[in-house]
Length: 77
Image (spheres, rainbow, N blue to C red):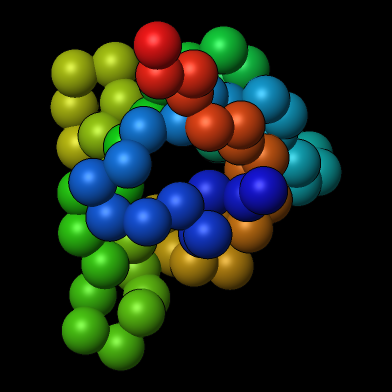
């Protein structure tokens, strides 16, 4: 599953970060690294961009970029 598929209000954990070169480094610099919890806060009316919360701050990324971030749903016990 990728970050663009995560429903609003749900949490997941980043499992892999895609992209190449400077783009991948930019994701990592923004805190999108494996084993980080992320949640979708809201999606723009036309579906792009997506606002996510991670590491105590909000980040807005394009849907195209969100497709490069692989996630797994967090276990709820």
